Image (cartoon, rainbow, N blue to C red):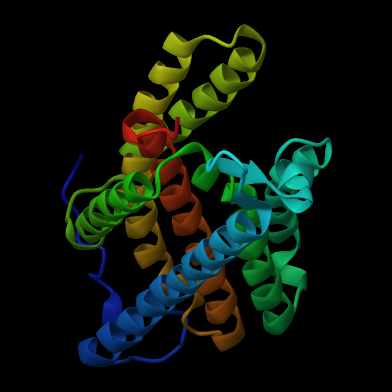
Amino acid sequence: MADFDRNAYAPYAAGMGRTISAAQYDQGLRSYMLGIYNHMSIALAISGLVAIGAFMLGTTTGANGRLALTPFGAAIWTSPLKWAVMLAPLAFVFLLSFRWERMSFGALLGTFYGFAAIMGLSLSSIFVIYKLGSIAQVFFITAASFGALSLFGYTTKKDLSGVGKFMIMGLFGLVIAGLVNIFMQSSALQFAINVIGVLVFAGLTAWDTQRLKEEYDAVAGDQVLLQKWSLMGALTLYLNFINMFQMLLSLFGNRNE
């Protein structure tokens, strides 16, 4: 990784066609990055609230004092409908990825938060599988790790593009291994996928943060594009966070008996 000065042309950047001061540039960049983190945080909050709400609606206390499923819980977690719940977030990601440029900002914002809600419904089963204290503990570990990695990506003077390309290759490998393990059902392979996955999404978090910071120059001259790109950046970091959280939970979470 080579050292480089990402903001060497900051006073002339952002496609504005005019010279701006370094202070103006820094203020705009901070506002842009803050928007990304705000959208991501709101999306995580929506996902968490929907997941908890679905868990409360989907479970009850059985006659033996143990957790039992309501008809709603049985529908979203054990019936064929569970596949629609599991795959719906992927459909949203494809929609956002391929249609975002043609959507208005309002439509894009609504779709993004709708995706967060559907993701929350998809994640709600973790409250059935894992103990609540364990989920909270892993969430805070993920949040602290994500914050440190993103801060590193934002502040480092090292070019992380090489790391990013390597992580993308690792991501494709994880997808292939995950598909294979659907049929193999190997606990050892799943453990390896989770361990490697944590490392891959850790690397992607740092690289994506640096990449989003650098791309500010290209979008700052167009306010609408800037707003849309902020949302797409939030989607990227949100997915990194959620995937890291799920893999850490699989590795360290305490399961309900």
